[in-house]
Image (cartoon, rainbow, N blue to C red; front, side, top):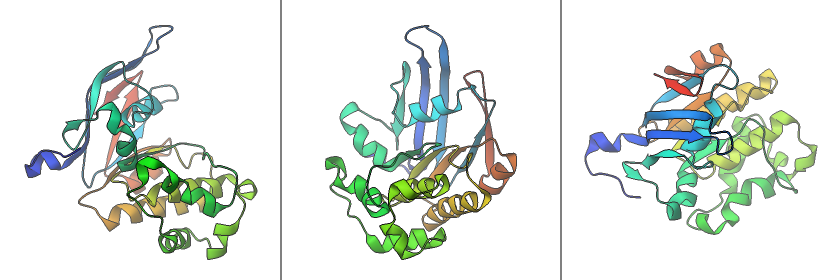
Length: 231
């Protein structure tokens, strides 16, 4: 997925052109045809009432749900079906609730590196330890069983697992909505540290109901209303 060669076009990491979703059973509009772009260095917050389409937008941008219309572009090129697995390693979606597999924290953070489409990436235990330390967890946390984790700890593991692939875009779907204040702070620290490591080549879009969090973490806020993105 090699993008255009001019610097202006390369500043746009993720783009949607008339991207829309319709419920196949009811034909109800879930996402009105939407134009959207996310540029390198941007920190965007997305707010809106429950059911307004925020998660629909993020899941469609991540191509986890197939769009009914329009297209998603990565660095100026439409994402063809065979390239979706690689695209998802560059554009990572983090859900509200962590999905972990059986085994230790180490097993969980190593999981993406066992997948065929990620064979070009190598797991770095030192980086995993550094990220966990940044979140206030000791090296021994890697040995903890996933079934013993609190909700906040599980979310941290899911975030570290995504960050170990060094993605360029994070799509964050209310990852802190059910967490205690300490875990919220740890998630925010990890995300902001990830962006600050390469501000000219990374960006995020963060769904939140917490307006104070939006002010802390973002430089611009967008709103969803009845399936329509308001910019």
